[in-house]
Image 1 (spheres, rainbow, N blue to C red):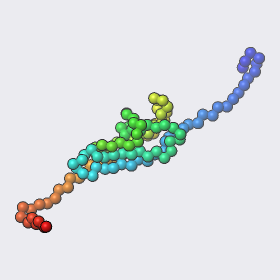
Image 2 (cartoon, one colour; image 1 turned 60 degrees about the vertical axis):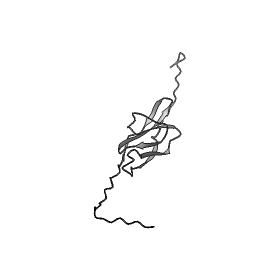
Image 3 (cartoon, rainbow, N blue to C red; image 1 turned 180 degrees about the horizontal axis):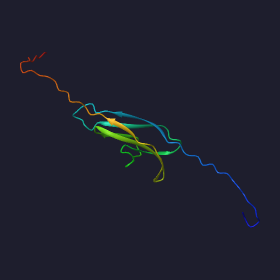
Image 4 (tube, rainbow, N blue to C red; image 1 turned 90 degrees about the horizontal axis):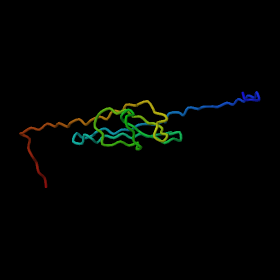
Length: 119
């Protein structure tokens, strides 16, 4: 109420921004001699008009790139967040992705096997 006994009311609608929608694809390690060849790609299907940052360590560190390469076998906790300047506006619940390691290929060899050469 002001000094003239007037009262004004107004309505304000505050809408929550929905979390970003995304899928994750990963590449397992195929050869045991390249133990750091796994990768994770985060594919955002709806950023709701916001800029994004990506994490594979549960949100401890973030990257502007949705592609992570050179990964070893193990579990990675993927998080996507909207960003407003340097502070996070909305962060997703971590999604755990497992990169599988390559199984060693152990063959059998007998010392009495013959060696054949062809020209």
